[in-house]
Length: 249
Image 1 (cartoon, rainbow, N blue to C red):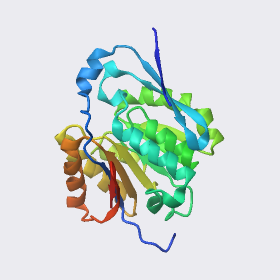
Image 2: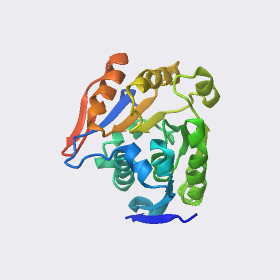
Image 3: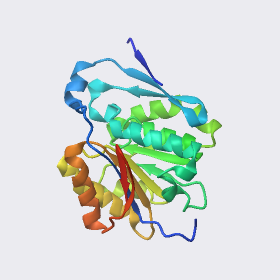
């Protein structure tokens, strides 16, 4: 099958367990994921150059398979933040998250999709990242993790992958909750997913504190995601706002 190629060139400080990355509404309209999937039946390999590690991360998308197999704007925004954090952590919004952890952070990515964010996190932070999504998505996660294994390893990181259905206690128990940070980007497309997401986070938080970093750019849902999280854990403190991007804790 023909494959289309594209280039896309302190311990004493208290941290809140939820960091939510929200992006202001863009002038361009977000494409309908179902329309996009129907218009492209070919696998798509995208080369993404990560400046901080001077390496290319290759991501395979399978648009015809559905929304979990495509890259979405929030993922690229979070990747950009991770890239810039490695270049200059002193000015990075993510420094609030990572400087408060005195060891390489153990990271879990929820709703990984293509795994782009988690793979870049492993490489730029030099740490272990576990990618998760529904069982039928895991084979593509495996493909992308293995395609970038050398780049990640050269930078001191490692990537694993596992199925995780939100709200399923057995899945969470299988993965465990020995994580310092949970990341997610554009993970909630349907309203009925809010409650399972919150339940999964609740299970992750039992007996410990975990920082949750979420990037969400679809304007009609972004505040509902924010409200769903904060209605369960009442945190809401502005951290940073710089034009297109706004991060709040």
